[in-house]
Image 1 (cartoon, helix red, strand yellow):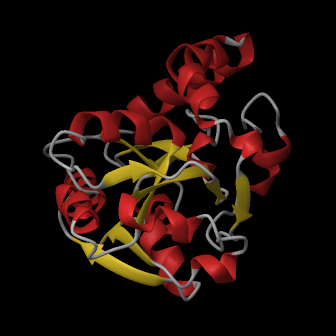
Image 2: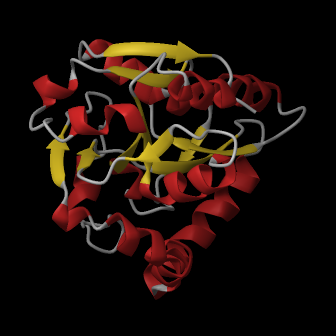
Length: 220
């Protein structure tokens, strides 16, 4: 389900009443946000899927302005798409998630940014079909962003229970244990410390106090 379809469904509550999405104004206006970043802001760190024919070009990328010369493939209704367009990036959009990979494989886009916890599984699951796509080994992007659980406004009791549960998990350290269980291996693979990190401003990230909370926001 795409984010826009999920939001529409959340408003009616007919199909789903809970969705995990990157923080954004449109979700906060139309659903109840539970402001505990369940992936501890790991969405902020992005690696790049690129066409292997272009690997040498990305080795020359040092700054955000260098990156702007390349075409970025993004899904139409992602908050990242909105941010990149407003920052003047050369955005190539697709309505279908799988189309992003096919476009990259055929050099109709130059790269797809994916979170550390997404990129390895997505690459592994498609590498036999996409023989030209590889994970770029030298770069990483930092775009401050968190994922929240959003609950339908029709379900305030569910929102109350989820909020209570997540705050308890965070307070006891259990949330961090779960985070490490599922993401520690991907974090080690990403090796962010030995990549060139390009920082990108996120004009829609309003909960900046979370950035300094080491129990809720992960810093690589």
